[in-house]
Each structure stands twice: as C-alpha cells, then as structure tokens.
Image (cartoon, rainbow, N blue to C red; front, side, top):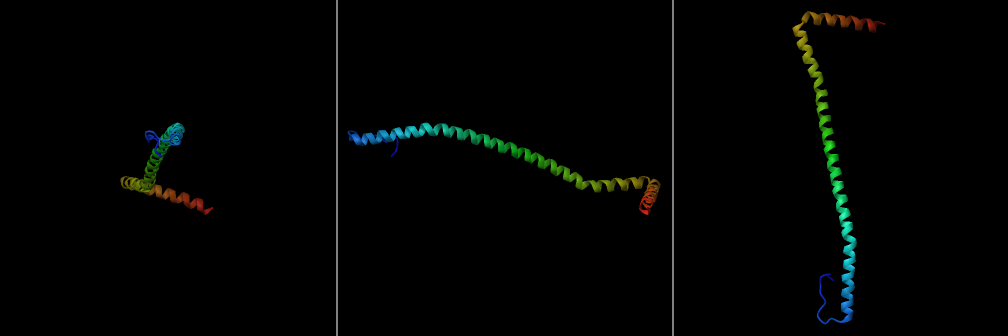
Length: 111
C-alpha cells in the first residue's frame, strides 16, 4: 500500500485502521532510514575522498619511480658518452690511466 493513498470517503473502520497503521509504519521507517541514509552518505563521501587521496599518492610515487628508472637506465649510456669525450679530449691521459688501472688489477689478481 502506498503511504500517500488516502482512505476512501466513508471507508469502514477496519480499512481506516489498516491505513492508519500503514501510515504509522511508513513514518517509523522514514524516521529510522533518514539518519541511516545520512550516515551512509557521510561514510561514502569519506571513503571516496580516501580513495582519491590514495590514488593521488600512488600516482605521484609511480611518477617518481618511473623518473628514477629512466635515470638509472640512461646512466650507463651517459657514463660511456662522458668517457668517450674525455678520451678524445685527453688521449695521453687516457692511455696512462688505462696502463695504471691494468697494473693495479694485475697486482691484485696475482696474489
């Protein structure tokens, strides 16, 4: 029965009693449901805000991780490029450094 349905004019006392009881039950349900609905809405809003904050933080961390990964993967190529330019600019120093390094490694592995 719809809570807005009016009793017919001159309805019998039992019909009016049933409709009155139904209206009272609907009113009671609304009194209980309205605060619960409000609490659910607040909890839902808080949960959505938490998820948005977590997603933002995760996105920021993922961006930083991707940047660091890119830097690490580019490091060997950068080191090789710097080494090549140093060898081209100072060929005698490069040969001397290679000889010194070879001597030191030879002494360390000979023991």
